[in-house]
Length: 569
Image (cartoon, rainbow, N blue to C red; front, side, top):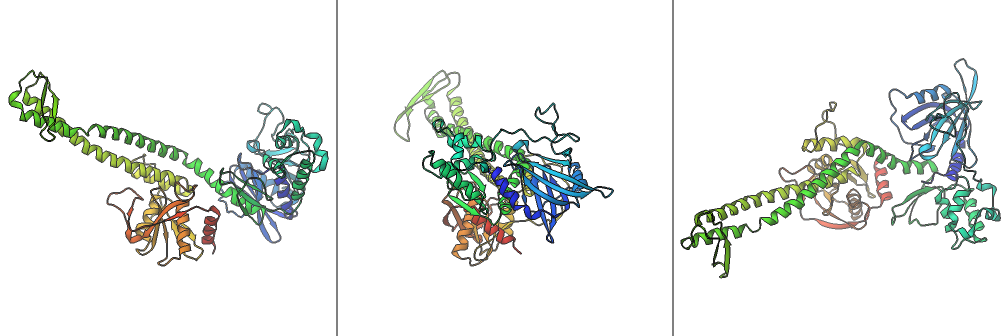
């Protein structure tokens, strides 16, 4: 992603109001995340420092985190040396993704001490280190010994050494034609040469520089380079970019002119990162908790799809059962001219008037040959009936697992156990030993408020779907579901919604479906009184009639705004 050296520069600038603030509290809500609560101007500010291998970053956050009852050892060390202290400086080291926070505090006997928090944002090598005034390491989140790292040691008591650099140049020290001495136009790939030359550049910004001019020459490259760096020096303009064609998403502190077709602006860099990483962090936690469940459902789906294919092939083999009955009837009708030892019977099919040859077993009597074909007919008839039942059951299972698969793409961490419990109740997995749940625990539905102020509910799993459709909603209210596509049940809690609300509910139903990333998704809607749950049907399964169909294209930011509207007091 685009948390490069330039973004770090703008983030550090935006954090300067925290300087002189008092560190009120330190928490470690997740294994790779520290929250420093800074009291400044009579307000608490949550400074998040993360060394997650994919989401390493720092910014202010409004999100509320659940903290462990027993703080981890790393958090205890930070508390001992930093709580009650005052931030003296927040700075970026050169143009790199390294940030240092100087803190002045008191030790156990009241003497003034100086500590520095060093955040190294380097992907999977990210680290968070606490050093004293002599740059001796007090503690590091990731310990690096001489055996594990040949470049430096990160252990308590050792002197802090910066990560090895690639001898790149600070781009703010070079402007205009001065950059040309680093570029070989004959080698091509100007964006890659810029990336390898200048410190703090990401592929995103180097592609932006080369995209600012149609051709890169000795004249246009310095112009584009200076133009982009001039925008970097301006007030940040936080934007979330998305390319619907490629599905690629990125954020940056300025508008990018390259290949993005969807842009969402934010009031601050902190808001931008909260929004960007909230969904990804939730998906990461869900992935960790539900990884085994996702694999199991996928395996069960494939197993039933393979089973259906075999059942259909076997069903085709029973289609000649009527011929077996006919052979039995013709043998019986001509039994007077047959004798044991005959290998076949050629006679007239009295249904069509055509001659037919029937194979016979010469070791059996004519009567036994007739009985053989009658038994074959009855066997195939019974098998065809059983196959029809098995095919319907297997198709039902496939639809069920496709629905569960879709639900797993949208669930939160708190909803994983509901799906796991449902699969156990259906007999697809073993029931886990669980702690006693609170009785009559209310079912929580995801809520949206339409532009006209109507409440829209969404069922995120089958338990929620059944509750919403069969218990909560009134007969006259509108119910939505994607047409012939696995998806969530959606209901507008109003007897007379506007067309705009109907379109928004259809868009929400389209988003919470298997086709959620597509466009022009067909969504059926009808009144609840036309929605029926067949006796013995699987959880979440219903039939409906008297429906109308809308075509909706999900707009994530619009949906998010309707959700945020529901969360407002």
